[in-house]
Image 1 (tube, rainbow, N blue to C red):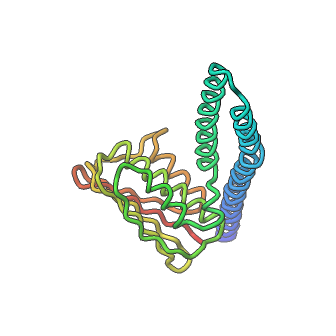
Image 2 (image 1 turned 30 degrees about the vertical axis):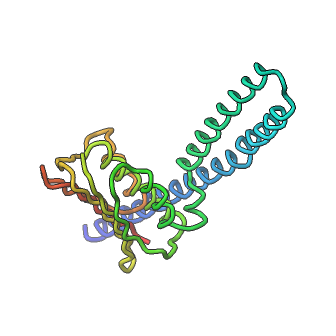
Length: 218
């Protein structure tokens, strides 16, 4: 029985290691795919739209008919909106500033556009790419929940490198009472952190704000 128990423990441990390795590969593959899509949008569709904008500008300088000028101006305005939407989509898939500058400047771009005041306590140091992307999307999803559901006026994001673990705290002064339900944003957030081999703790007393703490192994 002792030998069988030992063999069973060894088998379970090996299977758990295999699951963890599979999760890590899936997360890394997802990150590479996001980067590829962002590059394709930037180098492909965006460049073609910019070339079209240049052609419309040249046509505008040569046009003399008022109706033609009006049509060209309307097309240029539509094109400006299309470019803005495309850039927003590319940033959502994988922001270039995250790859180029790291977690802090990427979060500064995100929080500057939010309707709540966000204090950032994030180191400027770089992390490994998969961890950096995982932390970025975890924080963005947490802040999205804050804006949509918390009714908060302030939020705080803190990131700490604690030995072999990166700890992420996202807190707000909202109404609290947040719970993870199947298919909800917090459930998806929990799944994202677990896919990175980490754990998420949510503390959200009614009327006392919400605090999400994620621990992700380096």
